[in-house]
Image (cartoon, rainbow, N blue to C red):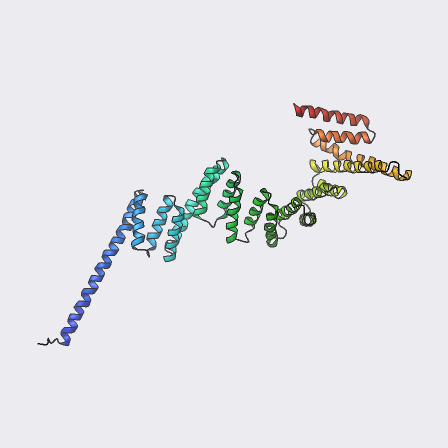
Amino acid sequence: MHRIKVRLKDYKTITGKLRKTAAIFLMVVVAICMGCQQKEISSAKIYIQGDQWEKALAQLELAVQSQPDNPEAHFLLGRTYARTGQFRDMNREFELSLMLSNKYKQDITSEREKYWVEKYNAGITKLRAMDYPKAEVLLRAAVNIDATRSEAYKKLAIAYLRMDKGAKAVQLYSKLLEKHPNDLDLLTSTANLYYSQQQYSKVIPMLKRVLQIEPDHRDALANIALSYDFLGNTEEAFAAYQRAVSANPQDKDLVFLFGIFHYKRKQYPAAIQLFKDVLVLDPDDVESNSNIGNAHLSMAEAVRYKLRSLKGAANSAEEIQRLRDQVIQHYRNSIPYLKKTVDLDPNQPNQWRNLGVAYINTGQKKMGEQALLKAEELKVKTVK
């Protein structure tokens, strides 16, 4: 056997040629692959320019399969999904593109904004037109486009409420609160949803969270008091009303609500004082005038009942006369407020009747009869 002798110089030359050939082969393979990949993206761009989105979609789906690390392919595919209304798929591709590179971040933000505004505005238009099913579809699309923006959630919740789908509305806010647990607007909106469904026990924890963030939040103070009141938790309701009024002493609505709290419990002196506080802020408040007048009538009737219960018992003439004077005084006290009530709103037969009763019980028979006649006339008109 003859051994082939190869000089060192010849060996180096051969090795160099082999390495060069391998490098050239590798470059050709890469070029071929890149050419194929670029062809898919280039074809997709041509289809996009020609508004042929389905053909573009097919090319781009091939592109992301063959080159999953190409951020442009994912961006273009996401953009194409958006054009065809597949917003969940759009977001998936956009997120993949951003994971690979920030090159298309501004374009992605712009695309999301464009489609979000389009769907949101269209949803609001349908909501105003009371076309709630179409509003739901459009607003759901807005939520899918950008789940971080609460506006679409809120309007979608309104659409659900209008369609008697309150549970879905609450579910929306609950999901959003998981991401933004200290968002005041979301907390109050969720509380309002529970309130509209009369789920007062769920309203209170939400509003407590609001008050932890903003202790003097007017609506939270008012609604937590109302919720305790509706649940029959009198002590908690009283404390909540007191806190609300103390924080907002010039808010006539809060003062009025506190007055109603006392009025319902026949705590008339406290109620009267609160309604008078309302009249300091607004002298023409019809309900406060009416409630003061009616509270005095109720107090007069309570004293009259006490007098009847004393009949035949051993009581001094002075005590009986004192009670009779109280009855007359309550009727007298009611007249200015009942008169102001019918002046402000003359079409209330019950208020004319109450005014007539007050006049008669204070010895003003003619004026009492006129007021009672007016009440009957208004009742007849109401029946007609």
